[in-house]
Length: 355
Image (cartoon, rainbow, N blue to C red; front, side, top):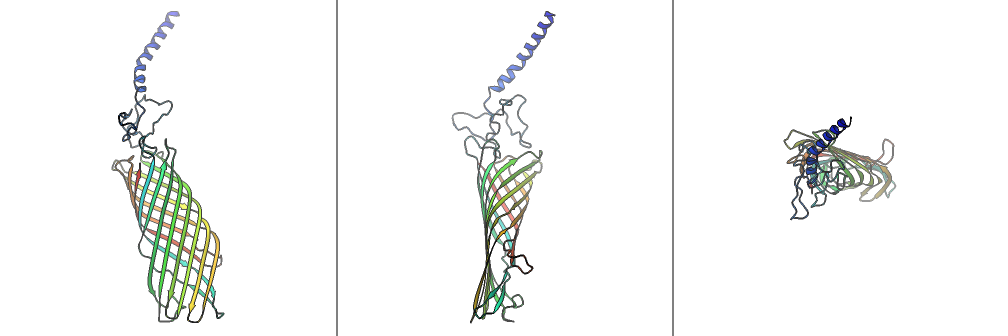
């Protein structure tokens, strides 16, 4: 019995001795660093326990026995989408330019009492605003070890156009004479979000979600005039509310290309202020309306994304853009109430950097 116990103990010691050198050698390696990361000390070389990223599509993964494998350790240091580099802060930046066509559904109308006691309903259409640029700038900071990002973005649209309209389009103006119609649009959108990159949907999918708040400021007006009559309508909305975005990418083989899709929505809560005026050679009048309102926005983007490789710090995305703004100018609930909506569509191209 004693002899059998001694044999088993000797076998156990031999097996431990055979394995120990491998793990001891692995444990002596420097903490793993993502390819492309540099040491904060130029005199200290940076080594890696594994030569490639081990997210899906980014490499073959670490060896079977690696340092820190039982207590995590700095396994994400330097990953351009999940962590900051040891030598640089986790700065995120993006520049997007859209070529869009804004459409205003102008249902603004209200009765105006003139100085002679006559009550007239003022309503004007909106002129065509044609193709307009829509720039967007985004800056942010990414915390370490895949704990997310803080992003701040700003975009705007400024549009104006003047066109002639017939008396059939403006019945209140002199028959046969027509008038000159001028319309303007100003839209500013500021988003502040917490974001997280999620490489967890499978080997060919990437996902990034954002949750935060949105501040929205909108102004639009139309004014028409001929030799006898001038009318003007204007609508101003400002609001703040929750905002959310979901990005999806499906990678196409090893080409560096990916199918891209985004859905974006917000619910700003704010104040609508509208103004209506009419002026003739002998009379004039003005009406002002105001109301608190909850509005809704919904946007879609679809296209292609490209980067040198899946885990590159640089990406370019382009495609189709559509966004709708409901209840920008809804005052009242009756069939003849004053209301206004905006939708924009066109193309976009966005360049992203992850430092």
